[in-house]
Length: 207
Image 1 (cartoon, rainbow, N blue to C red):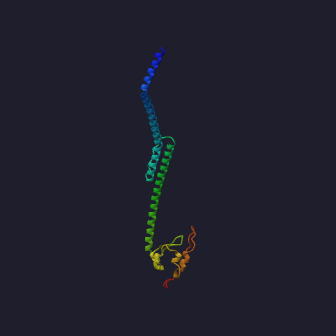
Image 2: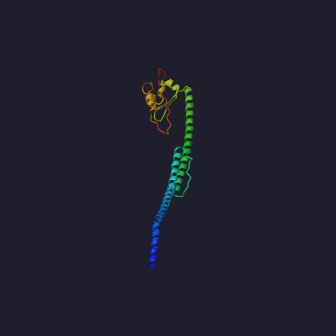
Image 3: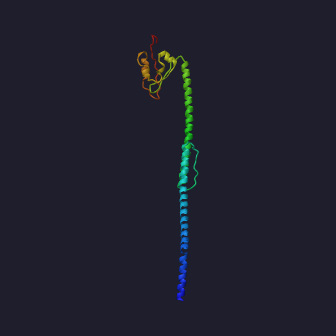
């Protein structure tokens, strides 16, 4: 009986030795398959997590380029409620503020252009009126520079056309116009009316 058991065990061992390469291949294939599944799952999970991180960043970068190009109405859609969601909300708030500032700036620019046009119209009207009056008119700003010199003033005082923009003390310096130089270079006090003065100037023997 013992010999039969030994013979049977030996036969079983011999059969197992015969199937050893096949069983080894099956086990290796199984473990290789499990390893590949783990690698694929880990890679997919890593890509998924990376996409969840990079997609909001890419959306913010694209939105920043749109804002930089002047498209202030562009907004980013919030997809998550985490820190990236808060960042998207902050970006959209910033874009809203930029759009509001842009509209206010455009409105201010339009108002400034309109006021500038009104000032230019008034200046042209004033110059047109002064060009046709017989009274000589000269304007001097707070810095002491000559502004408007109408034709009558140029004719009466003998001023050259380039007097506008030059210091009044230089335009009226020396000779018959010296009394005007003292008046024109007097210190200007803001908010106080300029006192009226009468000055006699003699040119070519005429007062």
